[in-house]
Length: 391
Image (cartoon, rainbow, N blue to C red; front, side, top):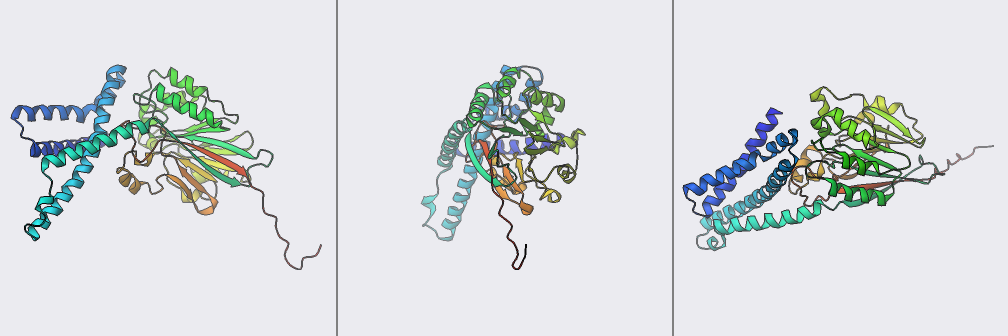
């Protein structure tokens, strides 16, 4: 954790130094103004840490104010940084061309003040759009045909939520909107693939009430994500159980005698010595292969030893980067970044983009998602008799 904090402060602090340099190159600042900006930027750098401290002491109102201020600023600064770097690259290219061909390209180079204004305007526009987008989850529907779904049932509808991050930012209003959409979908099974909580474990009576109101006929199932361990695993598991979820930690159930559902702990639990570790192959081998097998796993990593033992793995975690172009970085670490993937052994993977937000309450080109998975009965093809066979 200490290494993470040091890395965060160095990177985030460097972005603030870059912004300060851009302002000073565009606008003449006195000593007082420069010191004032440094103090303001220092406050913003440490705002995310202050949020966690305020949460731990039960100071919800100051924590919420600090979270919204600090995290929105983080989103604004990130987009500003990206746009400004792109403009700097353009200015450098034009400058080099002007040196190579004197008198031809110099007029195409915008001034430092103009590039500063352009970066601020683009950042403001992207973040205003992203703030609205983050509040409106999209419904993504996929259909999978399988002979393992009983003909008498015809269809099993699973609704997946992931990375809701209930807490200071994703509160009762946003959660109610999510719950309303889930109820409209009329699921047979609801699954939460980790990070249902953010880090706050206080004042959760209303979220419990909202999530408990969802009553799929074949049940609700949840697994841990990394944030359940950050918040406190025992309290997080109790919260999920209070919401009516069956929490799967290296174990599996057969829902209503129709579908196998297995779930594993997030690897983050290992650093706390709290993860229930089990071989996925060992876990999945216990199931009747004539039934459709669902594997719930927070991170979209596929275990090669488990291929062919599950029909569909549901994951989340990536948020699809949440704010483009951050997705270009997260895709490096998680190639199965978002959406549907066919895997060897007739297994499949679906990665939810995340239903809520972490950090900035902003999403850009990575809309929040509630996934509907319709498992539909498919008739087995008749086995053709070989030529020359006699009865």
